[in-house]
Amino acid sequence: MKQNKTIRLPEYTKELLEKREREVITEDLYNLADSDDQLTSPTTSTTTEETRLFMEYMSLSNLQNIASTDELKGKYLTLKKFFKSKRNQQVEVYSRSGVNEKIYTEGKVSAIGRDFVMLTNLKDRIWIPYDYIDRANIPFGIPNYSNSHQHYIYDNDLRTKLLRNFGETVSKREVLRQQFYEETLQTNLSSWKGSWVDVHIKDGAKKKGRITNSEQGKLTLYSQVKDDGVEMQNIQFIKTLRFFQVTAFLFRRVLKGSE
Image (cartoon, rainbow, N blue to C red; front, top):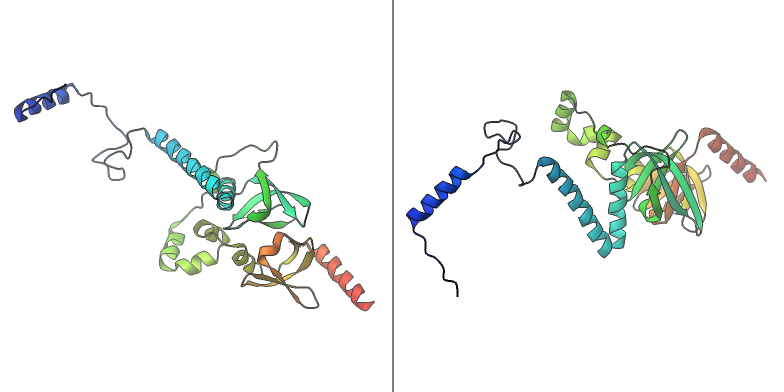
């Protein structure tokens, strides 16, 4: 049986001093004690680049663990993380419409909400709820850019406005709302009142009209005759209508009413 060796304080002090003399001290240029804008000690024992990579790995691991235990929540978090990494970049989305219809959409990621993504292209603005997205990807042949260009430039004037009047300043700019909040589909649509849209509903029906209201879980559309409400939970796909499409729709309604 191995006996514990008793060490006296003088012996311990001597041994400790000898170890300190043999210790190899490396100069750390990043963490300087006399620096005003740097930390006085490293956050981890690894280098800064290794720490960054490990944090990204840890975030993805946590996401995978959540997805394995809660499929719906994991889907929401995965889609949000993907779209946020591709903000202002081209993506392709495969989604469901109606009972068996599939929709392929390609566009630039314009807004990422709590339960939806907004894509834009040269012609249309499109809202797709996460519930009805089957998969999302980068179109073939499109380079995978870094997300460094996604940052918003804060000048001194904007900083002052944010400090003194945060709510009013952020509410007036969609870019700032995207930076500070994750809007729901209902909240985002309320800021597009007056826009003509084509709404795909879960039962396969499609409704066209002008957005008049979006609250209490319902989207209200005006289609010349009366207001028509659509439950938010039944919306699968929303697409803006161009001028000639609105004109053609109203013309058909007039002809149908005159018959």
